[in-house]
Amino acid sequence: MHFKDVVGHIKVKELLINSYQNDRTAHAQIFLGKEGNGALAMALAYAQYLLCEQPLAKDSCGNCNACKKGNKQVHPDIHFSYPTVGSKKISTDFITDWRSMILANPYLSINQWLERIEADNKQGNITAGECLSIVQRLSYKASEGRYRIMILWLPEFLGKEGNRLLKLIEEPRPNTIFILVSEQADKILNTILSRCQLINFARLDDDEIAQYLSSQFSLSAEHSQNIAYLSEGNINKAQHLMNEQSNNNSKLFIEWLRVCYRGQPKAMVDWVEGMITGKHKSKDFFAKTGRKDQVHFLKYALFFLREFMTLQQGHDKIRLQDKAFETAHNMLKVLHTDAIIEMMQLFDEMSFHIERNANPKILFLDASIKMHHIIRKKSISIA
Ligand SMILES: [Zn+2]
Image (cartoon, rainbow, N blue to C red):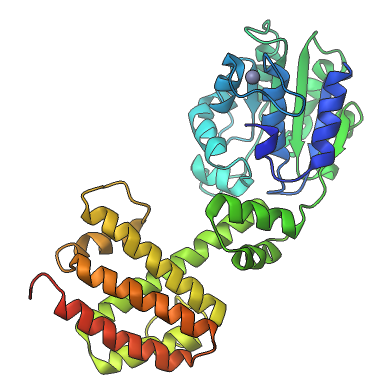
């Protein structure tokens, strides 16, 4: 992970880089920030920067051996500690899960983590055994880098066991860096808090989140802004909202295909009514949609069709998930490429008209009838 991949927090990056360049790196630091605001991502980028063999002025190089290992989260001098479940368990028992999780999402929440390790509603904990393991892991010499680094995620789970770490924090072995990544300072033992340098992570701006969403996930500027506004500075929440919307659209679109394929007028009217008002008789999955949502829905529909065409070409690696993937597979037997192209043109035209204030009920009902004809006329079983 590089500093450039961490959203926002420009001041914190400067502070960390300057202290390193002036040889004033604190050996025990607390990165304090709310869930999803990037304190853990920053700890990962910082650890990689400290171990980089040829650091650049503002970031790790990305090319040296240390960076290559850092980017896969397998550098032997970067150690991790985090809450686990089971009184006898320690972090290293879950290292494979941990690595894949932080590689996929360094903005993860404690609930996502506990779900991943199948905690079944049990409380997470950093145990006495884990504290011993931390002391032990930091007693070895650095194997490759100039530092041994311990990233301890959520020290608020330490309880009084944390006192076992005091000596390590107070009289660190040479070249040992302890980074505690916390969401709630008031739950950290005072004895620990008072011995660490505290770095506060401010709430991320909506603009910073919006920019991240549009560059990472190719969302439109407007869509990114909407999600950023709802996510309250939490990147994790922003990603969740994005997935939820796309799930909703996926369900809605699959249902629409089914209704259009059958071509029963009443079912079409019901679907359109449900789509516009959110008051669908039998389904509860969609909320009332405004014009913007209708445009997003059509964008999803286009995305689905593009992925479907990739599948038709014989590529199995497509980005549709679960039910949508299953539906696409079933459609292979039914839909011809010509039909897909006609539908794409139809959705393009619809977006154009929705943005120009066309009546959505008339538009979607008209489109449903056209869809029925396209599917039937161009379907493989008839052709
Ligand atoms: Zn490097």
